[in-house]
Length: 398
Length: 71
Image (cartoon, rainbow over all chains, first blue to last red; front, side, top):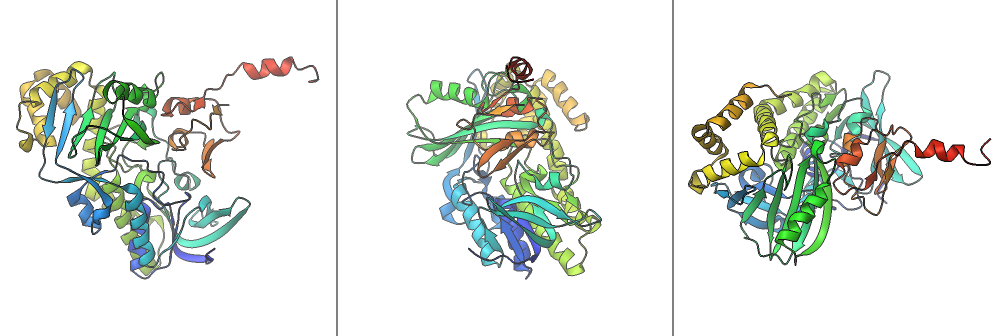
């Protein structure tokens, strides 16, 4: 086995996109970084619908064609009564092969000088007498833990994040702000190769949506996310199975992944003395879509840059690290709070509202449809939805 | 305390995230529950696969009371 040092400048817990890009950013500047991942193999099992936008992705990394399963040119939205409208943005979307993507990001971190270690779980954080985080306790085998000291710890340990909890940060979302999700990787499907489909409705995906993201060669991620507070009687999987029985009865299931996504918006505190949280651990996915890859990359880079500055300044206090929290809010704070309000509105839609909206939008040119256009169309043509939207934009997020 | 059906669990961590008691955790690729569980059953609701069985509060005391050697 590789040998660990007793001290690193930074320990990053979790080698998803946020953790790996943070590790790369910090290592590139010449600092010592340990990036640990509790899973046996980085990138598996995938917990994601794997959709990203090309322009967002290329801000952070040079795109490798190996990562791309499908290029997406349209997004089709289906109401419960079957009415549908399509959005065709200029910006190409990708459905990724996260297995390869995640491993390559971790490889970029390793090539930048970070030491990467899979099958290594963090068991706790180390605190000094003032409560500052000064390292982590790692489990390298079932019966032996070791302590590794660091100036900064970055918690990138996903939805089930423990690092934040160990540091005393309240990370528990409200049930209504937690998505309960499951996805099948299916094969043998007759689906459009360049269109992502979304299905809405209280009987289809209460408080959320069902998706079909093509992955090429008749394969697709067919998944569902439903609101946690509406999952008490029927599980997300039962809703998904119901849809698949009706639509793809002869399809094959190559893989099953479950997952939860925190949709309450960014945690109030994402830094402490010696600690920063990034990605799902900081609840940074967009609440109305659950999409989090680009946001995770953004957060990882921002946290990484602040860590580099902090190491230069020799200051790891929360006051210094708050620069990360501030720049995150500066970049994405407004988008996140609008996204939360849209999520709240969509969760309140009944089937009639979905049917009406889709009927209105079905006649609009797909190329001209943007999120803003969608909102405005509903806004202009339907007074009752106008009221709901006014409610949306005048109420502050909870 | 809740109980987990390991053959159904997808080890996704949704329940871990929602547990206010911090009673659930993923370790060695399995989901485990600690004695901190207070039987609130929020995790039962959030589990996408239905892998968590709710606490059945009355079963345990009754069973204990009828155990012949339990004096």
